[in-house]
Image (cartoon, rainbow, N blue to C red):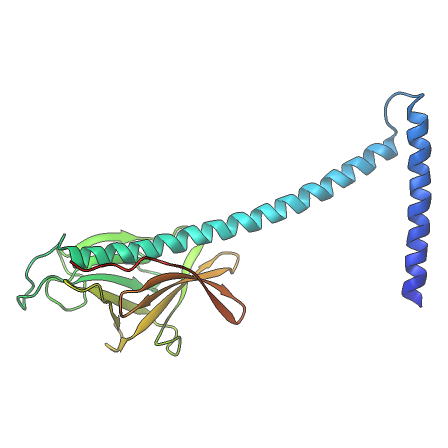
Length: 229
């Protein structure tokens, strides 16, 4: 009952205000300029509209930047996959096989790079002298919040290596800490606003970008499969 009374009072006030504006508009035909009240009303309306637009713009821009960072990561993993299967950095390793290409993720805050690519000449999953190819950082305000594997049953992986070796585009996904090999991995990127997206990598060489919603993961874009030579 109180709610109805409040609504009626609000409608009454709106009616009075409209009558006031009508009177002012009528007087405007005979007078020049605006009153202080009219200027304040216009300024208040413009301020509210501008605030709404700015909030929506910042939210949109943040999501676009996060999506760009996540796609860049997915394309970098694809680049490592191409390096591993194309023979661009091919040298015979110490075992007489084609050189594996590793994309290595390190969540240690003291690490120079968020992830980097190297050619594993001695097949030890460690970047030694002469093996480095390229290093990457996500940029200010973005971080790898988690690395998950095996259908997200394994979480909080600190160091992960994804290994590609000619001639197949398949990925070998390895936890550096315990040498466990997984069928898949998901690298989760988080912005400074707490928004998240992820890159999924499967052992068959599948690479895709996923949007993360509360209690839900939505497939956004899967990169075309790489055909081995």
